[in-house]
Picture 1: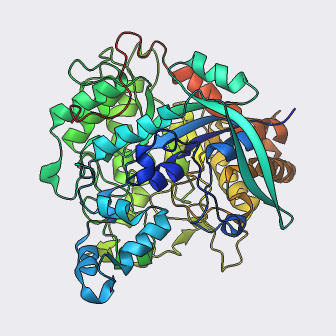
Picture 2: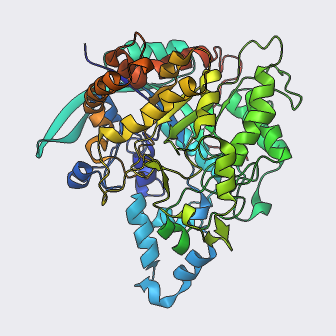
Picture 3: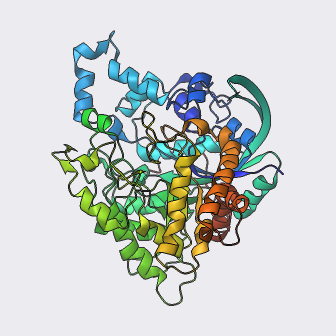
Length: 545
């Protein structure tokens, strides 16, 4: 029987949505759907180059038998377009090509595969009576997913094998899940995909604007959270639940600090992450985290639906605050029915033992908003791992293990510690190094039920998240090869470290990583009965502002 796959973190409609948005095609409902997939540059796809091709569109997901997709909605952050240095580039006459666009505008459009009009929209230009607003954009992307749901489509996909290009025709549909019954219907169908919605970045709800006076109030923020849960009495409720939110992202959201995430060149020249970086949770952030989790600030259950928090992109200090102030004390309360699990959806390993080590290092890293210390350099490593605080340490792994959480393996070369010009393997070895170190933690730390660590690891590619993937696994089409290679690699590891495996065979572990861990986690934490009392209206509406 062919393997099936799950992906804890990817953006399957983003390639198409951002390509068509703010163009004439958006006005045609037959064109403006996730099934209108732009053609990929097959040469760039073969080489795994960052741009020019789709990594996980629905044609590729169907072909690869990726049955369960945690689809991340992501309004692109204004910090990519609103920095003072970038504005100076746009206003400089020497940077203009003709009368309309700067060279930097053209570069942004090319890298992000968007129109020049969409780039200008991100920069603040009004189009069709709207200016770029995170909450509005979030709802438009949600409506975009709904526009193509439950439709049986025939699509084609290009793939490379042995330097030959093949075109496959495939047929299928996707269902946006309201309940576990919806998930099972699509997963058990021979040509279905189950979409479970997630969000990347709390900025998506209308905070973290470069001009913070544009942020919505805490009360509006809480009401929007209620709308996501289907519980709002003043806003239109969503039809489909958000399973988890990646709480932080690249820029400060005014709730908690974010981890450094940009390479040197991007930060020194274009992208300034310094505001709020490496800080912890503030009082507002703790209150909003509790609101999402359905508890009050005294950690008592409120009866509200739970939206889980994903700790990827949180600074080490923010992760420490979240664990010590919310997760651990709540989980240790007498009579707790269901622990709060820790999710880190698309990660690599930092090589550090604890969060304090990462915090101490981060205290040396910034001076006047630019890189100043070698431990902020692109090649900062620890034991062959990418040592930045954006990656997890042993302490993160311990709490994911003890809470029954999930760790999604990113397919990003940088996050996995691969640098193409060096000796390091750009292949399955990058994954094996990370998996081995994750699996060692509960044994090394003498945790209960250490073999349960194999229930914690899954795939979280970050496909369509502007990553540079490992060359052999540049799209979801490569999942079958990934599973075969990982089975062989784990077989070799078992011969070297049999104690890590117990009675488990490599094939069983690969099945867990590729699908069943994510599915079993979902069955435990995905709540029933969403949207029965108050159905949302699809589309966008300025009243939800």
